[in-house]
Amino acid sequence: MRKSGLVIATLASAAILAFSFSARAFAADAKAEITELEHKCAAATTPDELMNCYASSDDVVVYDIETPGDFEGSKAVHGDFQYFFDNFGNTKIEIKSLHVVTDGKMALANSVQRMSGTDKAGKPVDMTFRVTDVWRKENGKWKIIHTHASFPTDMATGKADMQSKS
Image (cartoon, rainbow, N blue to C red; front, side, top):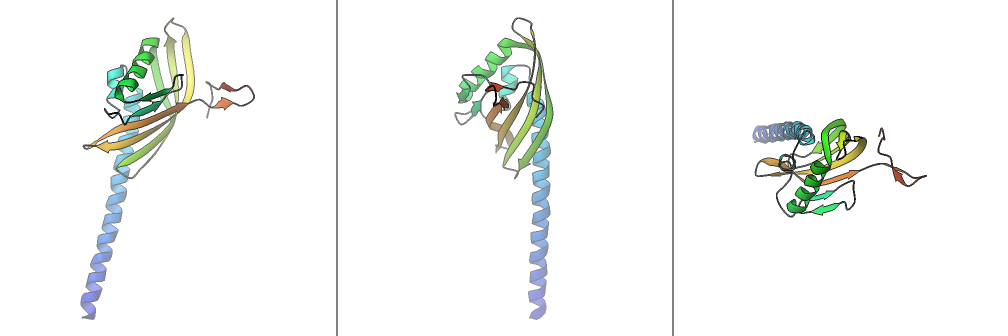
């Protein structure tokens, strides 16, 4: 009787240990997926390509860096992205730093990004900003449900620091 209890305890411990390792591997795979998707989304060259990164529902929200900055629902978010691509050209987004935390179902990615390119008039644009994306796994695919982009603020002047190294 005592041996059967020991066997059961050993099997239960092995099962818990195996689950623990598989959960960590699952989260590590998800972290790698989100990291790859963040770079893919940053490289988008059209509003439709960028929208492929986002949930296609009214749940999606983007807080952009330019006013008005609140966009709720996929139609409004697409309009914000259309405005961006209509007003900037030859853009390149470089992810300077990226941190991803995930449990395999939801993920949080925060980054510092640098955008260079030209504005509508052909004038050079160069800015560094922060982005936080919330990802949710939907039907086996990761989709962004919330983005918050911001500039650090110089509290002495009250102005955005668009060249921040943060």
